[in-house]
Amino acid sequence: MLKVIVFDLDGTLYEDTHHFDYYAKRIAERLEKEKQALFWQDYHAVLAGVHPLKIGSVYNAKEDVILFLDSDHYVYAVYEWDGTKWSDDAIQKHYPKQISVDLDNMLSIGDLWWVPSTIGRHYGLTNEETYAAFLETRTFMMSPHFTMKRTAGLAELLTQLREHLFFVLMTNSPKLDSEAILAKLGLADIFHQKIFQAGKPVHTAKHLQELCQTFNVRYEEIMSIGDNWRNDILPAKQLGCQTIYIDPHETGVNADITVRSVGEMVQLLSTYIKSERVSKK
Ligand SMILES: [Mg+2]
Image (cartoon, rainbow, N blue to C red; front, side):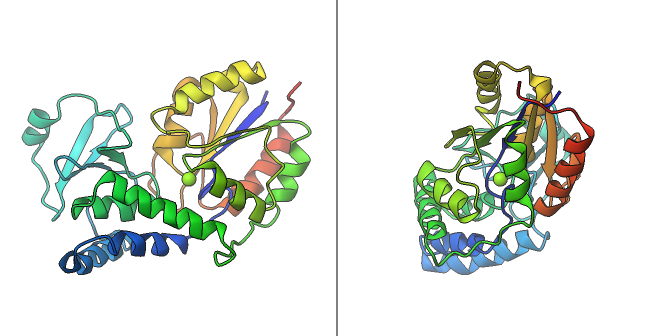
């Protein structure tokens, strides 16, 4: 029986994307002049899908290479920034062990948030510099200048369902701007618990474990919904939670259910809930 739904925020409860260009500008202006054109060239190439850096890859900032991991976290492909592919022998020699992603140097490119910052890192910015650009972007998103499009039916569905289910927000973003975004979306009072700066994917499992205790439920009674496979889906699936993956980039990885958009998620959730017994009691 489903009792708890854990929602990611960005890309999951809204799907506006124009703030990514704002973010890219904040990154670019921190770069040396001669690197800015290269930054934009790479940024547009990634968005067009013609760059080795892709949604779903992992960027090793220390060695400046792009890794592709299987679901057991082993490296199966490595690309240099210019697209040069490593041989299988070189991969075996250099990356024989499982890879642990982190939030400093082994970056999981799980959604568009990671694209401007990763290209910035490639051109010499530090983690602190890209994070400052991120915070400026979040401040912009709080302001009236950032207009957000509400997904039809989402707030209504959640308002209806919160009588029967516990809702948890789990986002890597800070509290202040996330609360402002929730208010813009009409979702300010929807959640029974909100976890900000969650440190996903590193701490996803720990949070889910705590939610089991808080709400006195088993993993099978929790559903995780998100647009970042490595942050929101993989750790939840490994624990036995149900998952819905919002995959606008068609990365093709596994979840229990995959949808292409937030609107599709709303539709699916409303039919799913009707067919399943759901209760928080
Ligand atoms: Mg997200």
